[in-house]
Image (cartoon, rainbow, N blue to C red):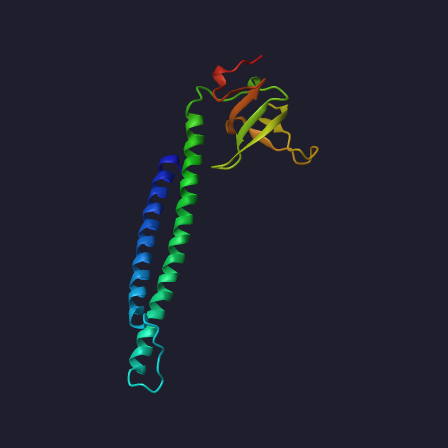
Length: 177
Protein backbone atom coordinates (compact mmCIF):
# COMPACT_ATOMS: atom_id res chain seq x y z
CA UNK A 1 0.00 0.00 0.00
CA UNK A 2 1.41 3.38 -0.94
CA UNK A 3 1.51 6.45 1.28
CA UNK A 4 -1.40 8.23 -0.41
CA UNK A 5 -3.71 5.23 -0.14
CA UNK A 6 -2.79 4.65 3.51
CA UNK A 7 -3.54 8.33 4.23
CA UNK A 8 -7.01 7.92 2.68
CA UNK A 9 -7.57 4.75 4.72
CA UNK A 10 -6.60 6.65 7.88
CA UNK A 11 -8.99 9.50 7.07
CA UNK A 12 -11.83 7.05 6.41
CA UNK A 13 -11.11 5.25 9.68
CA UNK A 14 -11.18 8.57 11.55
CA UNK A 15 -14.52 9.53 9.96
CA UNK A 16 -15.98 6.16 10.96
CA UNK A 17 -14.65 6.51 14.51
CA UNK A 18 -16.11 10.01 14.83
CA UNK A 19 -19.48 8.77 13.54
CA UNK A 20 -19.49 5.86 16.00
CA UNK A 21 -18.56 8.17 18.88
CA UNK A 22 -21.43 10.52 18.04
CA UNK A 23 -23.82 7.56 17.81
CA UNK A 24 -22.65 6.27 21.19
CA UNK A 25 -23.22 9.68 22.76
CA UNK A 26 -26.75 9.81 21.31
CA UNK A 27 -27.50 6.35 22.66
CA UNK A 28 -26.21 7.33 26.11
CA UNK A 29 -28.33 10.48 26.09
CA UNK A 30 -31.42 8.50 25.06
CA UNK A 31 -30.79 5.88 27.77
CA UNK A 32 -30.31 8.60 30.37
CA UNK A 33 -33.63 10.13 29.40
CA UNK A 34 -35.36 6.77 29.81
CA UNK A 35 -34.41 6.75 33.48
CA UNK A 36 -36.32 10.01 34.03
CA UNK A 37 -39.25 8.17 35.61
CA UNK A 38 -36.92 6.96 38.36
CA UNK A 39 -35.09 10.27 38.94
CA UNK A 40 -36.81 10.95 42.27
CA UNK A 41 -35.47 7.74 43.73
CA UNK A 42 -38.87 6.07 44.06
CA UNK A 43 -38.31 2.30 44.31
CA UNK A 44 -40.37 -0.22 42.39
CA UNK A 45 -43.32 -1.20 44.59
CA UNK A 46 -44.11 -4.89 44.19
CA UNK A 47 -47.80 -4.75 45.09
CA UNK A 48 -48.53 -1.42 43.40
CA UNK A 49 -50.60 -1.19 40.20
CA UNK A 50 -47.68 0.62 38.45
CA UNK A 51 -45.14 -2.14 39.12
CA UNK A 52 -45.43 -3.93 35.75
CA UNK A 53 -45.10 -0.78 33.65
CA UNK A 54 -42.28 0.55 35.88
CA UNK A 55 -40.41 -2.78 35.58
CA UNK A 56 -40.78 -2.70 31.76
CA UNK A 57 -39.57 0.92 31.68
CA UNK A 58 -36.57 0.05 33.85
CA UNK A 59 -35.74 -3.00 31.72
CA UNK A 60 -35.94 -0.87 28.53
CA UNK A 61 -33.72 1.80 30.10
CA UNK A 62 -31.21 -0.86 31.25
CA UNK A 63 -31.15 -2.40 27.76
CA UNK A 64 -30.64 1.05 26.22
CA UNK A 65 -27.76 1.67 28.65
CA UNK A 66 -26.19 -1.66 27.68
CA UNK A 67 -26.48 -0.73 24.00
CA UNK A 68 -24.87 2.66 24.73
CA UNK A 69 -21.99 0.97 26.55
CA UNK A 70 -21.50 -1.43 23.62
CA UNK A 71 -21.56 1.53 21.23
CA UNK A 72 -18.88 3.30 23.30
CA UNK A 73 -16.71 0.17 23.22
CA UNK A 74 -17.13 -0.06 19.44
CA UNK A 75 -16.25 3.63 19.12
CA UNK A 76 -13.14 3.14 21.27
CA UNK A 77 -11.98 0.28 19.06
CA UNK A 78 -12.61 2.41 15.97
CA UNK A 79 -10.65 5.32 17.50
CA UNK A 80 -7.73 2.97 18.23
CA UNK A 81 -7.87 1.63 14.67
CA UNK A 82 -7.94 5.19 13.29
CA UNK A 83 -4.96 6.16 15.46
CA UNK A 84 -3.01 3.13 14.21
CA UNK A 85 -3.96 3.88 10.59
CA UNK A 86 -2.79 7.48 11.00
CA UNK A 87 0.55 6.36 12.45
CA UNK A 88 0.90 3.85 9.61
CA UNK A 89 0.18 6.54 7.01
CA UNK A 90 2.67 8.95 8.60
CA UNK A 91 5.38 6.27 8.66
CA UNK A 92 4.74 5.31 5.04
CA UNK A 93 4.78 8.97 3.99
CA UNK A 94 8.04 9.64 5.83
CA UNK A 95 9.74 6.62 4.27
CA UNK A 96 8.38 7.46 0.80
CA UNK A 97 9.57 11.07 1.13
CA UNK A 98 13.05 9.92 2.15
CA UNK A 99 13.27 7.53 -0.78
CA UNK A 100 11.94 10.19 -3.18
CA UNK A 101 14.80 12.56 -2.29
CA UNK A 102 17.42 10.02 -3.33
CA UNK A 103 18.86 10.87 -6.72
CA UNK A 104 20.52 7.49 -7.09
CA UNK A 105 20.47 4.15 -5.25
CA UNK A 106 22.88 3.38 -2.44
CA UNK A 107 25.98 1.40 -3.44
CA UNK A 108 28.72 -0.49 -1.59
CA UNK A 109 31.12 2.44 -2.16
CA UNK A 110 28.82 4.67 -0.04
CA UNK A 111 29.56 2.74 3.16
CA UNK A 112 32.45 1.95 5.50
CA UNK A 113 32.65 -0.33 8.49
CA UNK A 114 31.50 1.67 11.50
CA UNK A 115 28.95 3.83 9.67
CA UNK A 116 25.55 4.14 11.33
CA UNK A 117 22.66 3.36 8.99
CA UNK A 118 18.90 3.60 9.26
CA UNK A 119 17.22 0.84 7.31
CA UNK A 120 13.62 -0.02 6.54
CA UNK A 121 12.92 -3.30 8.31
CA UNK A 122 9.26 -3.67 7.29
CA UNK A 123 6.89 -1.48 5.28
CA UNK A 124 6.45 1.08 8.04
CA UNK A 125 9.24 0.55 10.54
CA UNK A 126 12.89 1.43 10.60
CA UNK A 127 15.87 0.38 12.68
CA UNK A 128 19.30 1.88 13.20
CA UNK A 129 22.45 -0.25 13.13
CA UNK A 130 26.20 0.03 12.87
CA UNK A 131 27.73 -1.37 9.69
CA UNK A 132 29.79 -4.47 10.43
CA UNK A 133 30.65 -5.49 6.87
CA UNK A 134 30.08 -4.04 3.39
CA UNK A 135 29.15 -6.80 0.95
CA UNK A 136 28.50 -6.76 -2.78
CA UNK A 137 24.67 -6.83 -2.50
CA UNK A 138 24.01 -6.27 1.22
CA UNK A 139 25.25 -4.66 4.39
CA UNK A 140 25.95 -6.87 7.38
CA UNK A 141 24.81 -4.92 10.41
CA UNK A 142 25.76 -5.32 14.06
CA UNK A 143 22.76 -6.83 15.83
CA UNK A 144 24.44 -6.66 19.23
CA UNK A 145 24.39 -10.39 19.89
CA UNK A 146 27.99 -11.23 19.10
CA UNK A 147 27.41 -12.29 15.52
CA UNK A 148 24.58 -14.79 15.73
CA UNK A 149 21.91 -12.14 15.19
CA UNK A 150 23.63 -9.82 12.72
CA UNK A 151 21.03 -8.86 10.11
CA UNK A 152 21.79 -8.31 6.46
CA UNK A 153 19.94 -5.60 4.56
CA UNK A 154 19.91 -4.87 0.85
CA UNK A 155 21.11 -1.42 -0.22
CA UNK A 156 17.62 -0.54 -1.42
CA UNK A 157 16.37 -0.66 2.19
CA UNK A 158 18.85 1.94 3.44
CA UNK A 159 17.24 5.28 4.28
CA UNK A 160 20.21 7.21 5.72
CA UNK A 161 23.87 6.93 6.64
CA UNK A 162 25.69 8.73 9.46
CA UNK A 163 29.46 9.10 9.41
CA UNK A 164 31.47 11.44 11.66
CA UNK A 165 28.23 12.96 12.99
CA UNK A 166 26.94 13.89 9.53
CA UNK A 167 23.74 12.20 8.36
CA UNK A 168 22.82 12.02 4.70
CA UNK A 169 19.68 10.61 3.09
CA UNK A 170 20.73 11.13 -0.53
CA UNK A 171 23.72 9.01 -1.52
CA UNK A 172 24.70 11.52 -4.22
CA UNK A 173 25.47 14.10 -1.51
CA UNK A 174 27.77 11.88 0.52
CA UNK A 175 31.49 11.47 0.27
CA UNK A 176 32.66 8.09 -0.88
CA UNK A 177 36.06 8.34 0.75
